[in-house]
Length: 344
Image 1 (cartoon, rainbow, N blue to C red):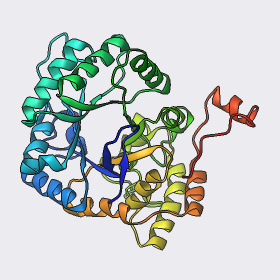
Image 2: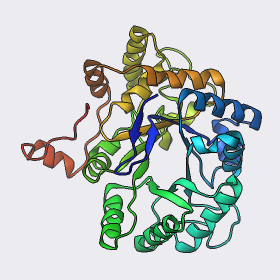
Image 3: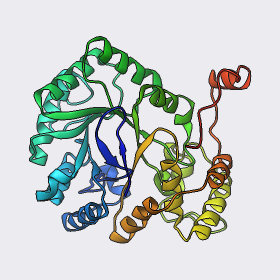
Image 4: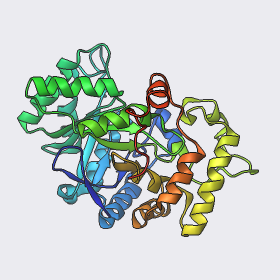
């Protein structure tokens, strides 16, 4: 396992992290699979033995059940783990039970600490930007949590580039703790972040932590040209998870992924994970697993690296759609505004 610094902090995290969203899954999350405690214990143990030290959960995952199960699975090895959890919607309910107000953040942090039976949270993240709460209030509350010792590092998730910049500049002006990471959706077929989020993170030394690196299973190898789609996946090409990709476009990408996987004696999932770990600014990619077999396969992505030539071919298979004003800056004024680097 390799380790990288998380943004501008001194914290070292594994390049592959484990996402515990399916732990005790209920409601809409159960569609992604449900992991019971015995299997969770085994999966976490395998991760630790493989050198994984970054584990992600959230208060909103199955009403806090994911946090409870992750903590129980870590047990006495909690000190080996970097626990990343997120605040947004609490278990208690009520008019102030959602968002990133001071009222909610402080209460949510205390509740997460209680559920996980720990004195501190390694990385505390805001699950999404909250347009109804002033960013000054959010950053101030997070800073207070760090100064109190309840939280060691702070991050955000699903923030746009301008939202991150606003948070960074505000913290600097007020001498408050700055965010060190942004957890975002990014994949071989979901490259929108390259237009704005990646450049901002590179400029401001904010670590990118990736969720959904297998694009909701589209890059796992289950979808094959000329073969029936997996059961229950009919709506994925019309919903938000697919990011607008059409089936024929996915087939073109997967033809190349399967080719590289065969050449490398690897799985398609390993190719997709490896691809992200080669992208500039990416610190770690979270993956989930319902079985030990899936887990071990995903962990195999850390044992090898795609070549520059393979990266170029994968980049070309499904390039990002460049929005305005980026297409003007890069295509018309490109001499002084080159596209973000695609290969480390």
